[in-house]
Image (cartoon, rainbow, N blue to C red; front, side, top):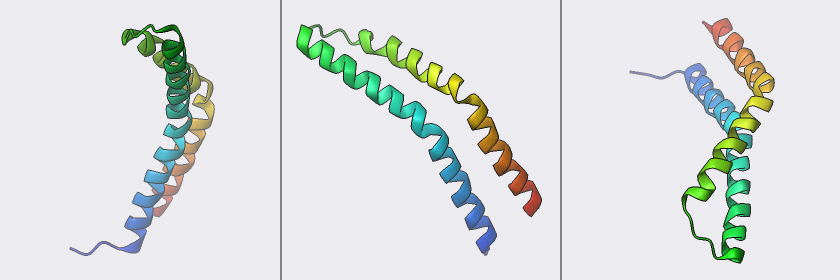
Length: 85
C-alpha cells in the first residue's frame, strides 16, 4: 500500500497542531511543579499530593483561558482537512 504525500503532510500538520495546542498547558504544569518542588525543598515538606492539586488547577485555568485559540486552530485544521477530501 502506497502512502501519498498529501496524507503524510496531513499527519504532519495534525501532529504539529497537537503539539502547539498542548505546549502552553504542559508548560504551565511544568512551571507550577517546579515552583512547588522548590518550595518543598526549602521547607522540607515532602508531601507528594501537594503538587497535584495546583498543577491540575493551573493546567485547567490555562486550557480554559486558551480555549478560543485552541478552537480556532482546530477549526482551521478541520476546514483545511475537509477541503482536501
